Length: 201
Image 1 (cartoon, rainbow, N blue to C red):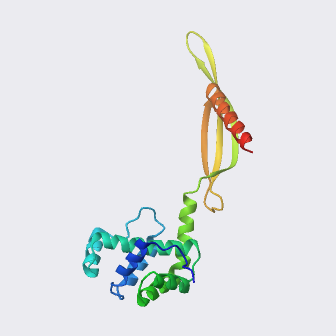
Image 2 (cartoon, rainbow, N blue to C red; image 1 turned 90 degrees about the vertical axis):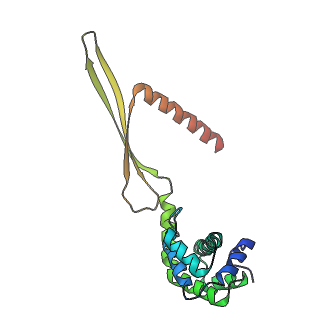
Image 3 (spheres, rainbow, N blue to C red; image 1 turned 120 degrees about the vertical axis):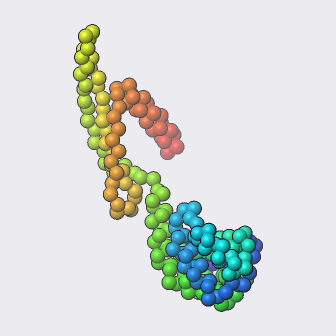
């Protein structure tokens, strides 16, 4: 039977550390990870919480970091591959985690899976580039008077409506105004991009 996700030697070492943790307190760690796993560069615990947990678990900062990393990895892999709780428990046990701890892990995943998957999906969508959904343009001429001469300054104003695909959120409107010279330079760049795209197709 194959593992539900790739297991490294570092992960198995972390599983051995997890097996030594008090089972009664382990769900608290797992639930905190599940609640924040979708937040980029997030610290799961405050400095005071970390100090308290490391003392309770008798782990060094490096060991506790490895434990958190292994738990996060297992949850992320389970979310991306839609791994069932039983398959997760089997993989963790095969990686060296005790039956008790792997059972707690799979139970936590069974309860939190729907929320974790949704949060990770939403976070990924927030990082996706916006696409153009609509555009409008208008021309204007500004008259300038001085003692020497009358001048006309023409400008073009574009409004681009942007939104992320499959996102029910509000659109964003980006307004840009070009002088004649700026607009000409912009179109030259667009022509260059178009020619490169044509060469690739």
